[in-house]
Length: 259
Ligand SMILES: [Zn+2]
Image (cartoon, rainbow, N blue to C red; front, side, top):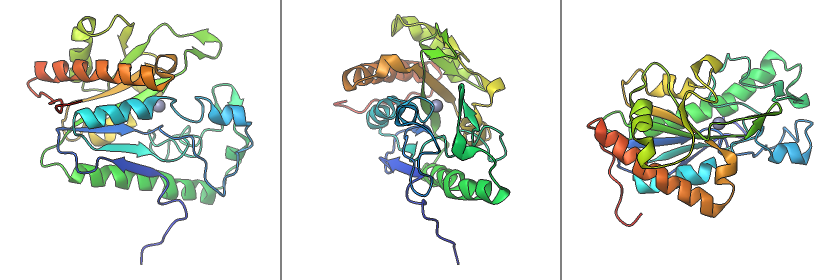
């Protein structure tokens, strides 16, 4: 008999499940929700609203991409402070004891059983959501993950505005970089402000590289997607940009009429 978990309906949310475009959109850090019994993890309300808990603005952008490309969207349903679904279970920062320069009291001194419960209730549920979404495709889809990052990290301003992150398969990231000037005047760079050396390409490694499917992790500076208007504008720019980039790789994603 399958054990049921209190948070099993919380850790993953799939939108547009029946989308039949050639892409799967993923937004691991979509939510800052911290369900019971975790309380506040000992953090202030201000910190629980900040980028350490989630990727502000990313879900709205991801949803618009999902609609435009008629693509399913798999989104995390709880805060990455509980478990970071873009990390493997054994990663030291999957359940961060610190985030940026803030200690996370509720993640200190966890027992093996505590960690195993987080993995079961969050990592495994998110993974099952990914596997289920991928099973709906006849051929491996293009994988596009959507993230946002803070303009100032550890008191240092970040110059890059959109990061195109890749692991060993850089085809889509490089195709996007090549046609970036046709779509945006923003500062665009490969593997910036993070790269595979920071352990952030887990989802790409797990779900795209083995299948050989085109993939990219988009990192958008969160001050550029701070409200509904700018989120829509950013998403619409990315939609045209991704459409051209995938076409240049002979794997065009079609934009649904009316979006
Ligand atoms: Zn993120």
